[in-house]
Image (cartoon, rainbow, N blue to C red; front, top):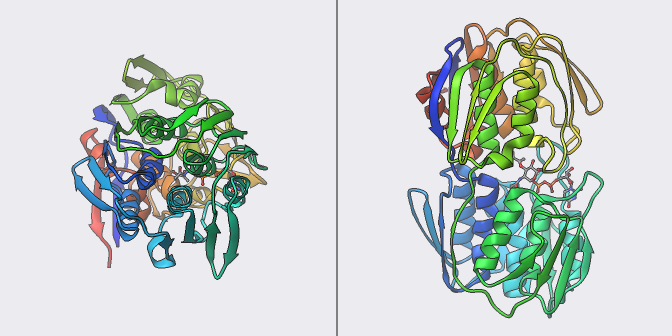
Length: 420
Ligand code: EPU
């Protein structure tokens, strides 16, 4: 198992290119199951999560060719069963449920296991499939679904913690091949949902309202092949913006969609950093002393839960008291225990963390607990005194394409070593 060593105190400068979005690529790869024709996707990031999704598609009978960032998938025939061995490594494997139900009218997919960022139920996904006409049983750790036909329905997908991203994706992918019109109320409006809707429309689907809380989907008989460029990863972009704020002298991101990261750029501006935006590039640079923040995570366009950990790393050395509230996954605070081991001063009460900014953090051996928590530890290590040794870096490889190489190109002293 690899470890990452970050030697702190080297300022970052220069530019890097943002990769395609993981959270767009995963459901879009699953959506290729909806047609017999070939689909070609570009800017698919090279990550262990996209590799798992390719393995799932292959298991389900699709032929997949991958060359650098381009993935061509053809699912002439599709199996409707994905067992535990195939899906257990990645929670996002649930997004094959919608395409399988639509294409095969039946699906048996093992339920995803627990997740360190909190309980992650799929009740809303199942509620949506049921409304479209599926009979569902959950038994022996599997979801089994069957439908003689799928019929359009009005479905409210808003849950206790707001809209569901993959739930909206899943129900949308099932509804595109249902008879009649489906209306999804309380839909997620994240850019990744819009990217999936764009791709489905290119395949011949009729979806309106992507990016709003109400999706209207007119079912069609069949879909055809399509080509698509995956949008830039707004969370990778946000992570590099925060890296630039933690210890940068001017860091520029290229191939980024500035409007997708305004919650992060607004927060950094409020914290006292200078942000310069062009069409597809953003530069973050220091602008005197930085200020503490009050942040609450919200569904898009609010501050993303996937940026909360990285922001905590920045705020841990920002003078003053910052307050962070996690509204989407209230237990998503594993990174704070590790940051404390580096000297951060944080109190957690319920879903709120109060961070008392300290002058400096000290490098320490720390353990990555999930994808974004790992990124936060790397960011903290960039500024900390001494060496931060991060273990379990497979979490980072799930969702950041060459994070260590990209940070190295900006001037970070970061190395990947084999652990015993
Ligand atoms: N929820 C339910 N019932 C459901 C589904 C969700 O109660 O059936 C709850 C969740 O427990 C949570 C909230 O609704 O409290 C929102 O969860 P959502 O379903 O939106 O999460 P997701 O679709 O499973 C995606 C991203 C996550 C990101 C969340 C929130 C992908 C592959 N994953 O997950 O990304 O945190 O949306 O924006 O798109 C990451 O990339 O590190 C990551 C965890």
